[in-house]
Amino acid sequence: MIEAVNLTKQFDDIVAVDHINAQIRDGSVFGLIGTNGAGKSTFLRMAAGVLKPDAGTITIDGMEVFENEEAKRRFFYISDDQYFFGNSTPRDMMAYYRIAYPSFDKERFHGLMRSFGLDEGRKINTFSKGMKKQVSVICGVCAGTDYLFCDETFDGLDPVMRQAVKSIFANDMQERHLTPIIASHNLRELEDICDHVGLLHKGGILLSRDLDEMKMNIHKVQCVLAEGMDPEGLEGMEIIKKESRGRLLTLTVRGDLSRVEHAMQTANPVFYETIPLSLEEIFISETEVVGYDIKKLIF
Image (cartoon, rainbow, N blue to C red; front, side):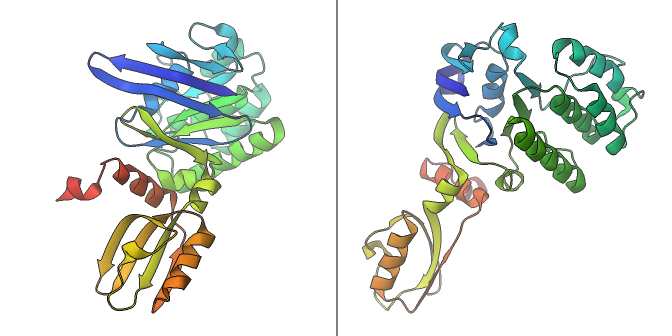
C-alpha cells in the first residue's frame, strides 16, 4: 500500500502539494486527476523519491521512499518527460533496468518489442513521442515491480496503442497484482480503467473515492417541473448546479439515487429522467464547487 500523510511540497512561494492525505490500496488502478498545476506530477515525483517532501511522509509498504533503494525497487516510474541515456537503444535500456530490477523479464521485453513493432537496436532519440512512450511502458511492465507510476502515459499514443497498454495493465493486475497509479488530464482515458480516483485542486486533495461510489453519489436530472415550482424546494436533493433551457431544467445533484428519484416522484413533474455523469462531468462539477468555474474562464 502507498500512503501519504500530510504530504507537502513547496517551490519558493508556490505550494505545489498542500498537506495531502491519501491511501492507494494494492491491486487497484488509482487515477490521479486535477486542474492544471494541481500537483499531480509533483505528487508522483515524491512517490518516486525524485523529490523530497518538505513536510509529511509518503511510504510504500511502510517504507519512506526518498533515498531508499529497497523501496524504489518496488515501483517503476514513467515520467511525462521521459529520460533515456544519450544515444541509447531499447536494448541498452533493457540491460540497465535488468541491473536495477532483479525481476526484469528479458523474454517478455523481446516479445513486447516485436508485438509493438519496435526495433530494439534503433537509437531511441530517433523515435517519435509515441514510440518513446511505448518503450517506457514495455520497460515498466517488464520490470516486474509491484507498482507502476504513470504520468500522462497515454499522451502521444494512438487509440490502438492506448487500448493495448490498458490490456497489458489489466493482464498484469490479474496475474501478478500490479498496482498502476496514473496521472492524466484525459479523464475519458481513465474512466474505463480506474477503480479509484483522487481529485487534486491547487495542491490539495478534494476527494479520494472509488469511482463507482463517486458515480453513485452524484447525478444529472433533466426535468420539466409544474408551473411555478421552484427546484430549490425539492427535498432530499443537494443541488450543486442548475441550468435551464426554456422549461427544461438540468440539475446536477448530490445524494443517493433512490432519494433523488423519490424527491422527483414526490414533486410530480411533467417529465424527468436521471442520467449518469461521466468522470469528466464529475470533475467539472466538483471543481466548480471550489471556484474553478469554466464560465469564468470563457466569458
